Image (cartoon, rainbow, N blue to C red; front, side, top):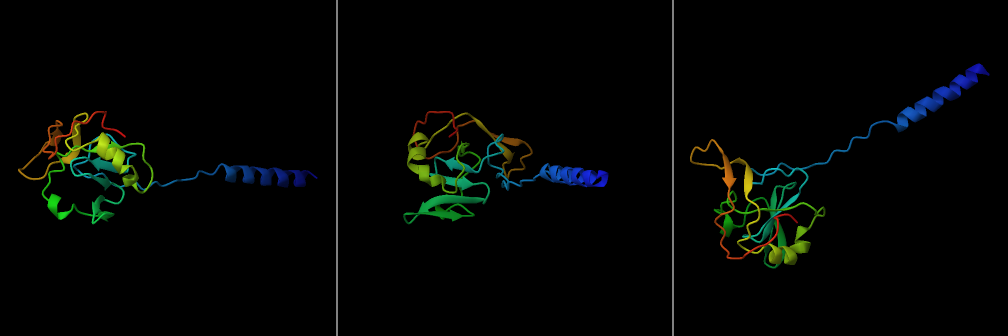
Length: 156
């Protein structure tokens, strides 16, 4: 009887300890680009108002309209290849978790029109070229091509 009791207690403790086993969840968050704004760790997308496109951090790709369809590409479209992304204002989409941020494109385009500047941004890395050895700070006076007057805090 005593050994049967010990057997049940042992099975109980094994069951309980297996229920308390730690579950590890690996969230694959991509590495933000050097031109990305500092201070955002749980973000997947930036909206680039002057270019009217998105950047997907996880996939390291740009999302833009090409021939009327949303396209993903690892590099900027040809007409923007020389664009200075360090100077471009990035709207950090902090509350979007899906796979198609462009579902909100009409709202983003109006809310963050060309020329939009929210809070000044500091980029993650060094601006390439000219022997820079300091972090590049964007004071919000970038080389945007538009004249829109955005309002808001730069977060969506």
